[in-house]
Image 1: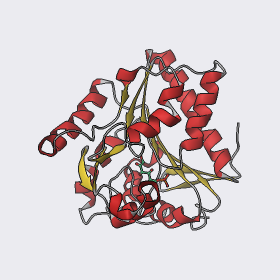
Image 2: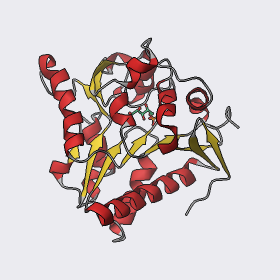
Image 3: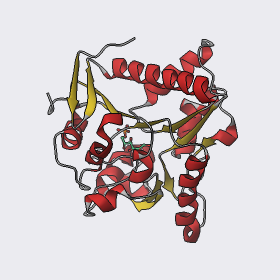
Length: 266
Ligand code: F6R
């Protein structure tokens, strides 16, 4: 099992700093596999909240490896992804449904009716209603045992972008359609072949939905994330830095970061 070279507590959360993203991702895969085993043992199922993006790719590779080695089954697992672009068809290579099929769903024994992703194909007039259903599905499934998160350069979690809302208002945000922040669009430009091709909107699990998970694992790697990590852990709680809202549930949050992303907190 990969060991952090430094462990600290900030804003009530445990922060583990690893010598590399690879080691942090190994630790994340171990933690997810352990959560699945414990939850399945206690109540015959496990419910995971999942993230996409470059950050968790090695984590999914690690989970697939454990599955192939016969160490981990996803048969008793259900998953709920944080977000999806809108509008977006499931077969589009840039959809988060495609991402999840490529990195996890297509390689493990997770049942198709348990792998939930927000639907980027619903008519615009029903997008809010459809997204809100997601919170009901998660509650009906018993709530999330573990939510995996990345963090955006601008501090976003899921696609909960920086806003001028009060902290109380932001903490209550449900799963819903949102406008993407210019920084997010810029960061996705490479995948879409230009910023003008990135959808302007998305569907995202809300801050309230994320914070309701029984445990939260946040991954951040590389120098580009250092400011967002520091703002989330050292700054005040503010909706301008959505990651800082995790401080509201500090004890159930673990940050796994590499040296570069930890540059401003050490
Ligand atoms: C992805 C998501 C986003 C990403 C964040 C970091 O499902 O919700 O918040 O976690 O944008 O993205 P990467 O990992 O590509 O740097």
